[in-house]
Amino acid sequence: MKQYKLPLTVNKGRRKRATPELFPSSFRCDCGEELDFFENTIRDMKKMSKKKRVRLGEGKHTIVFYKGEAIEILCPKLGNCSITDSE
Image (cartoon, rainbow, N blue to C red):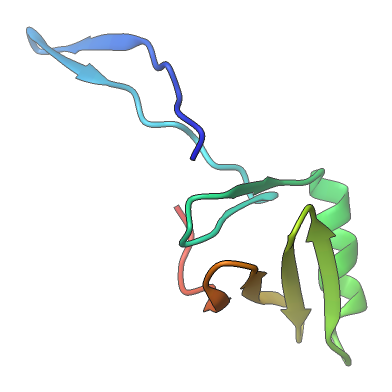
């Protein structure tokens, strides 16, 4: 799992860590692996998947798109992991 070194910010006298921002072109598997793509690639995959299932792979992980949405990640460790929400 990737670890981020985040800057500390001051909030009303208290120190807290800033949250890493996930862009619409990034996905995180339940096993902790993060998949990063260009936004144009994700946009194209969503367009291509309107009528059929389309797969996009990075390393050993594969994202499955269907009906214009990313529906699951195929993980070598955990099997099928459905995509439920975004951060």
